[in-house]
Image (cartoon, rainbow, N blue to C red; front, side, top):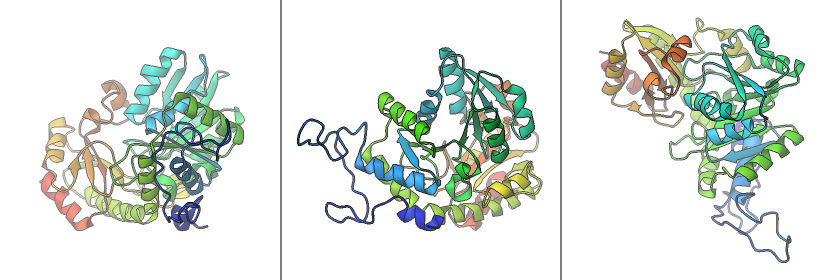
Length: 380
C-alpha cells in the first residue's frame, strides 16, 4: 500500500468480525470472559491487551513501516518506557534542543536512578561520537527539534549508533510518518506524541512507539504491561480516527506553513525565522533528503529580543490560539521560554536559541489568508 492508503487500511481488518462494523469498535471493558483458566480469545485484561488499542497499534506500525506498535497514555509515558530499557550506570546522548518535558523527565527523574544524560547539539553529526563511551546505550534524537526546528541527519546518526552497538531513538512528532520515516533511515525506535498530529484534533493525550526488532519489541511490550501507562479504548479510537485523515491534513499544514514562513521572512519586525523549508535554514539540504515536505511548525524572533514584545504579539492574535501543544487542525501560538521550555534552565535554553523573544507557531489548516492577516494585525 502507498502511504495515503495505509492511513485508512494499514494493519486493519476491513470489518470487525462481530457485526461487520467498518471502524474498530470501542471495547470499553477491563476484562474478558474465559471458557477455562487461560482459555480466552487473545484478550484477558485490558492493561495487557485491548482490541481497540491493538487496532491502533497495528495502524501505528503500518504507517511507520514497522512491525510492532505500542500505544501509551502520553508521549512522556512512551519515552519513559524507552529509558526503562536501561540500567543504572548507562548513559544517553541526547540532542540539547528538545521538548522541555523530555528534558525534565531525563534530568529530574531518571538521573536520580543513576542514568547519565549528555545534551549536545547534533546539527553536525560528526561531533556526536565525542560523547560516546563504553557506558553509552542510547542516542536520543528529535528532528525537527522543538522549538528551534533544527534538522539532524538520521542516517548519519544510525551509522554512529550501529558502529557503537547502541540504540537510536527518534522523536518523530513534528515530522509525522507522512513527512519522515526514521525506521527506513536506520532508527531502532520511533516515538510520537500522538496527542499532536496523529490525533490531530486537540482532543486526546497519547504516546506511541514503533520498532522492527522482535526482541526489542518484546522488552517494550513487557515494560508497557508491567508499568501500566497504557491509553484507554476511547482515546485509542480517537487516534485511529485521526490517523485516517493524517495525509490530507499534513498536506494543508505544509502548504500553510510555507506561505506563513515566507510572509514572516519578509516582515520588517521579524529578526529570524526558523522553518526547515527555507533555503537558509541550517541543514536544509538534509531536510530535503530525509523529509517529503517541511511541515507546519515555525518559530521566529521579533527584533530587539524583548520578552514583552513577544508576549504582546501572542496576546494580540485572534485566530491563532495562545495555548500549549501543537498539531491540531486549529492554529496555535506559544511562547517557549515561559511555556513548553520553561522546565529548562534559562541559561541552557538560550544556548540552544530559545531566547525570550522566540514565538512558536503550530500552523493549522484554516484559510491561509486569514492566518496571515491575523499575524499582520498582531505584529502591527
